Length: 380
Image 1 (cartoon, rainbow, N blue to C red):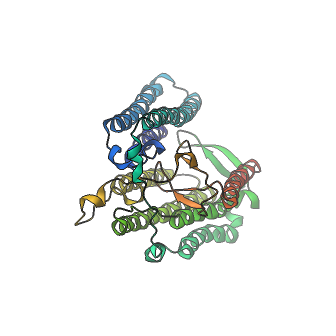
Image 2 (cartoon, rainbow, N blue to C red; image 1 turned 120 degrees about the vertical axis):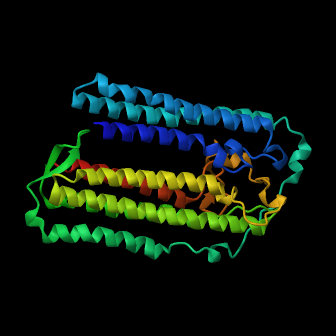
Image 3 (tube, one colour; image 1 turned 135 degrees about the vertical axis):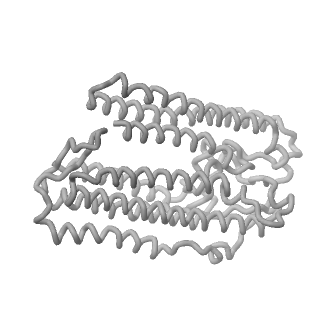
């Protein structure tokens, strides 16, 4: 009971913390997705907006978990408690995302309004766009082939075992566990039910592969003030995150394979090991994401290298028009041939929605969700 409750508490707090620190780790030149001249990036108004957003988002998330500390003592029935914890946690996480988005829009509008009051000469510094043509050749990331084959190798093992020892699999296969880690739903053995998890793993491969590809291949944005140093920081940033992408893919596939093997061949006892693996999985992924976000910032902007000069660490002016970024998050620029670009707000890359390839990616993601739902509904 308490294990499930603690996982929900950690999930809510981690979600609030990750959302709350997003303005702190985003590009300094585009607070809340608004492009500002470099001399105004450190203005007190910007600092105050970021601080308030962070305090509000994290503070509300911490307050939201207090009911979860007491509800197990109030609701004694396990089924009612499980229902409450699931509904409450889902509601809080949705509220976190929606509330933080509207709070983001509020500060964004405030900064846009303030930007209009800045002197015209402040925008005379519009900088040129700098590109390192050898940038991707210098990257030493996990190869796409290795990224793909590593996942295939993990998936093949449970599939082979299921085929060889199909007769040893019980007629009723555990499908769901309650908050006491006891099975509360079974499905009848069939080839579709036995291979459901491996099928999900196979569907995950193109999703994870595409996310990795878009991050590695996204167009870099370098500082015209110090292009060589910013290119080096950006390279180190992508290499570090590429390793985390790889670790995340491997751990995700391993977790699903372990759950599969447990459901097919063990079923009783040792479930604590799976819970331990899930907790370790969450701690590693969330902890590593926080560490890389704080250490590198977006595109390595917060990374400090030995011998950095003042111009190497100062914010630079983002010369892309604000109108190209819907709400500072969605990029739409028909004049830009790039499909993947670095985010203005947050960490990583996003799509240029003016390109047909971007919409193909969106359709592919929706197709993955639909196939996953269909796969689940077809299990009896």
